[in-house]
Length: 608
Ligand code: G6P
Image (cartoon, rainbow, N blue to C red; front, side, top):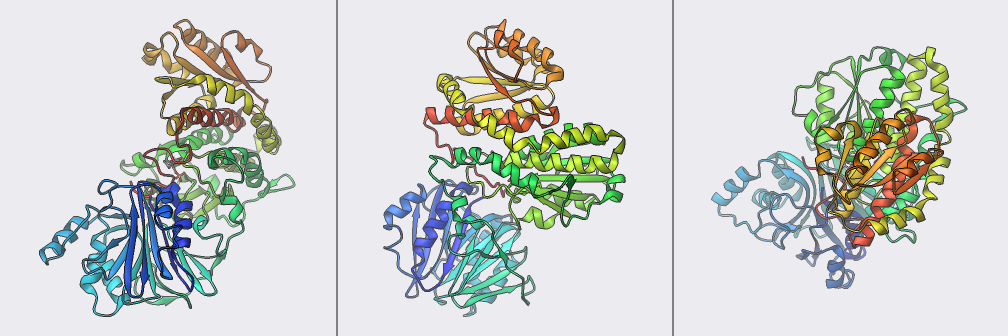
């Protein structure tokens, strides 16, 4: 995690650095800092609070002169979020300053080596070895000192580096952590992602692992890991700064919830020509599909929950055995993956360290890897055989909403596309699903209309010690996501259970006044779920239920009912999740929580 920015140009650097960091705060917000070069001297300003505090300290950057600088917002891994551990880190003689996102795995050995040579360390971080190593190798040549230092590092790193002797040169290095370069006529930018620089330029150079870049106001030179100069075509970003702003909403999360009809429409409609589903530029074809014996879906967090819906979809429509795995578990077992396996990787950010490692493991074992990713040019997108972008636009709130919804949409498209190839005998079923799929944005819009009712329910929720979500089949997959949303942002303990499993232990926790949220939209199992509701009611639970319109009998059992429109059972998750995103939002709001930046979390988990 962590966010980094850098700038070299002809105007004051600090303003850009602070604004850029504010946009990257979702990546971590334990502490922050900037370093600026002014008249050959490195000036650093740090805080253990939010970027807002850095802005206040520096009068929005005005007090920090200099036209070249770097900045960092931290999600602590090595060492507490203290002033000493905040980036940028400087070398002993303050000749070099470094911001780093990633983990240096061999930092202890390097630290011991440098200490034995008389270098003093002031922080507990892994990062501090980097400026110290650069200083050790420096003989007047900034570039070669960085190259030598980098050759000693093991692990993941995106770096922005300043040298006090080079008043307009910023060096950037990337290895397994995200870093992009923004190009403009008389300035160069670096950042962990596009949101930090899109208001300055839309011409972006995506760095690849092993790349090193030298930026000056005159331009950018890119080098490969062997030091050879290389050229790469820049990409042009097709969304503008408004997409990364709150546009009148109090929180990004609510803005992103409301954007879901549009985002899902974009994801689906951009692939539909008439009744055809067209995935431009992917190499997965009918031949490869026909040789697929198993599908392995690998992801973390909400993306894993989207993957659970994918399992129901693929098994039902394709009749191909499908597993869903947490990336952090998958990478450390001995998975049965081979040429007959299609691995589907799901990741909003495209940078999650465990997911990336799992992807590499799947490829190593011969599997074809297709990724569902939101961030263009991200590490997962680059490392995959095929990528299907979700086109959700930038998602800033740490708790994902439109990211998850658009992942579901891509899974639906993929399932219908593959079913048409593999199961022509089931075409009536597949086409029925397709017809419902194209209506999805409209139906999501309808569910969003119940926001005032859900807000009222959330107001009454208060701050319970814990609550439970139950569901069966797709309802169960959604209950996992609904429960995660609530605990992520409201800090209320909540658990999701497969409703049939409740009586095998968890029901002992149900007592007078406990809230149970019952997802009862999967109509085939509606009666079963109704029985589960009766079981918890009999033990004193208060029930909030979600059901498909028309199932009014549920109101006899549940204190509160949210109805969603009827759709194909395989698409239910897309409608059913919306009320619980809104519910989590308002419960957290009434508790006074920091909705967009919940404690201890980061949006992009680039460490394992
Ligand atoms: C973090 C985020 C979650 C997200 C998960 C996976 O934990 O807080 O919202 O679901 O990472 O992220 P990815 O970018 O791989 O989808």
